[in-house]
Length: 184
Image 1 (tube, rainbow, N blue to C red):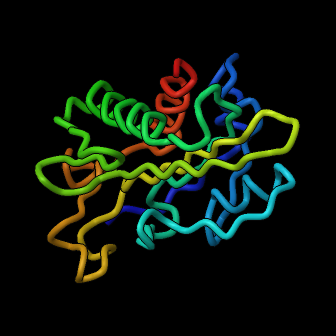
Image 2 (tube, rainbow, N blue to C red):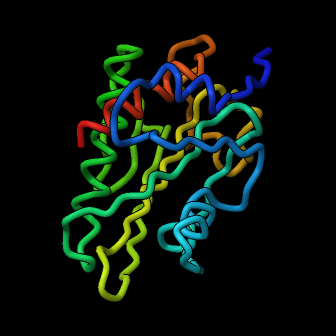
Image 3 (cartoon, rainbow, N blue to C red):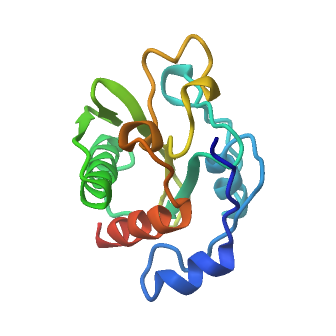
């Protein structure tokens, strides 16, 4: 039985090293949406939801759900390219860290063996007389077991632990993913 492991902002920051992504890390035990928290911290209000109204399930202490605030130089009307690039980075990180065949289902879902393991949501916000904001919301099923998913999702979802038949150190994976995102 997998035990929930706690993430430490201090440990993640110390192990991450220099870079743009992850200069400030905040770990929350529970939140409605990491994108909402990041947008509030950026002094903006948000009513954004998941893509097409979908939600993301995450068992406490088993998944990796986080958001990254960016000020990208892309058109505010076209976040699709950013979502696709981010999804590819998630898939590539899974492949390089665990030697699993992770594929991107355009524009923003990551699959292992025809089951969803991760997803990306990009929300853009315009700001008057300032660079616009983009929030990359990333959710990865890390140490969930089949019983952690709702019955509706059990046949369509997987986790890294299920795919590799063993637990995953969430901190180590988070650091690898943040480093690869920094390259973007």
